[in-house]
Image: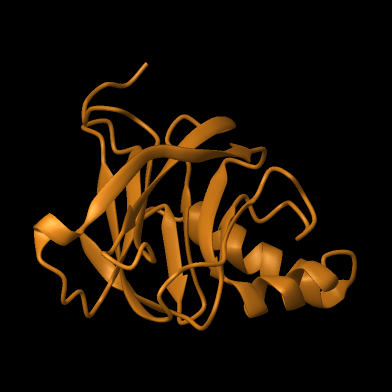
Length: 164
């Protein structure tokens, strides 16, 4: 289900917003096509978030020109939530994690992932709760013919309805 759009200027951070920018638990994609990305979410039959995805809005490639790498890398979740973040936004947020400004942003993110919809979005990030919660999750990446990233998908629950 399409839930909105975010803008990525130059790099993308993927992971749990409880980590600072230097954390090894975050994913960082430097070779992403800059621009607007459509954000989607799916739920299991028990209403848990089973998948989140972003896709470049202006994909001009034929499907035969695209390729997906399953499990390109993994991220660690420690606060039950995951997000796709514009690098500059996350860098500023990370620099303020230990002060009032960072706390306000973190609380804003948490209030969105703890809401009935279990996700939140603004122009610089798309966050959601993470399926079963804490743990490690694989990140799947789709690239265009120039080998630039144009889509990222995280599956929290393999098949809809596959709850514990």
